[in-house]
Image (cartoon, helix red, strand yellow):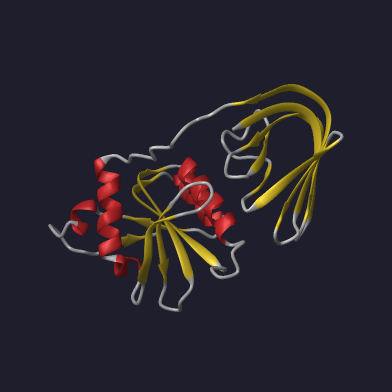
Length: 219
């Protein structure tokens, strides 16, 4: 992984045009080829990024990142303050707590509880920024990404939003809708999800285990 802190401006040229004016930012170049631009806020969400497969060309203070679709991320560097490379080694993967992992397993087995005629495509569907818990198809054949949490908070909605942004770039999957499923969903998370067109589902763990009614409460 390469970490570069630089004063730079950034232009995205593709399906739309976006511009970040000159400021100090972190440029993150990962071994998978992805390049992302970060500021000192927004937590883990980049200001802009290019997902693999893509390639980076450095030429006299200008980085040009381009993908097969012809989209470009042009980073004009005014000053480099730090430039280092680090070997992170193999990633062991995210280990979920027992309840959350079991919720995923149960919902995969009984995916029709999310809707009549639904089918499971795959658990842990891979994306460049991590796996989606469940990839499904609804009764009309539309792709649906399902993110499962024990407690549904804003960071989970942000995580699903990033997955949806990437998945909807794939013409074989798009359009992809989202479902945010959890045992408890905070009101702020629900409001954010609904604003982004993401459906929220409150899961009853005991019901999914078959000890009570198998009805899900939908809100």
